[in-house]
Image (tube, rainbow, N blue to C red; front, side, top):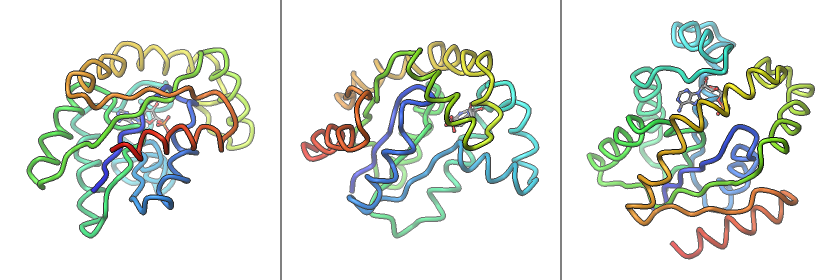
Length: 190
Ligand code: AMP
């Protein structure tokens, strides 16, 4: 079983790459951002709760996010493995994921970070915002706030996974195919 954590700032290409990897390795792709957006669209209680945080570019509280992630995993009892895209984003989420997977006899196989500089990411996100209409991608202040959240709360996870010998980093600049190739090279060593 392969359980991958895709790591990287907003706009790094996690979602795009997950689409390729999920078919190549037959994995279930869970994007916490996509699950929140789906709930907002359907005006569920979870969506209403998440919206105010997402609108500002803040992280949704851990308890809400962890429960949601666990529920998504439970929906796929026959999965051969998972791609976690946008989760964990805090230490509390990383601890919770390890505990939750351990109870199921599973574990994170590897965490792979897609690296790109902030200016490149801002321009990718503004372009994406024009196409998708996502409000958190259309405002540079909100984008920079998401980067701040990442730097403060998510970046510390590098050392958490490095200590476990599970942290890999790849260059996230290049064509989609080139980046898929870099990811595949790491995954094939697992
Ligand atoms: P994304 O689509 O991954 O860029 O996520 C969009 C927004 O959803 C983030 O800015 C957060 O508000 C929220 N979100 C997604 N994943 C998480 C998470 N693991 N923890 C907290 N908030 C999250």
